[in-house]
Picture 1 (cartoon, rainbow, N blue to C red):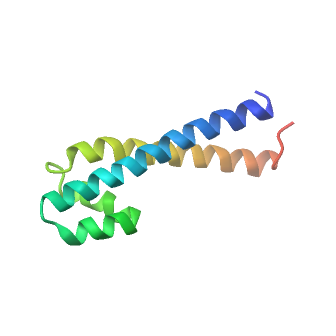
Picture 2: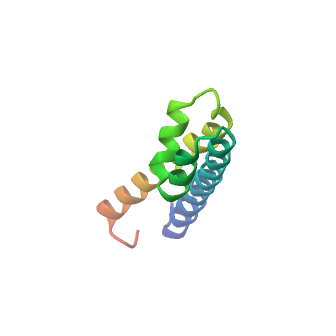
Picture 3: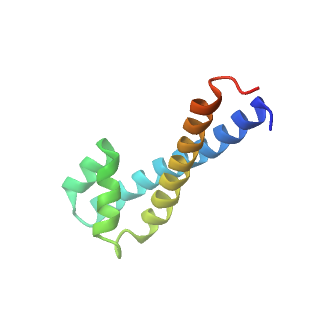
Length: 95
């Protein structure tokens, strides 16, 4: 693939992953506040890993936010690893 094609694919996949993570964090916030876990609700908006911890700890209550948060995190991490590997091996500009 050419440089622009790699950049387009990585930008789209990274954007989808980040969007899923953001919506998952917001849904986790609403779920935590709805279940009267106010500390988790406040901290999940400020610190991303707290939302992941809430989804792991309360799997039954947070099943819907987990369906958004976990794939979004995985997609963003995979995209970041591929982008980092391309940068390390080929530099900023692919030729």
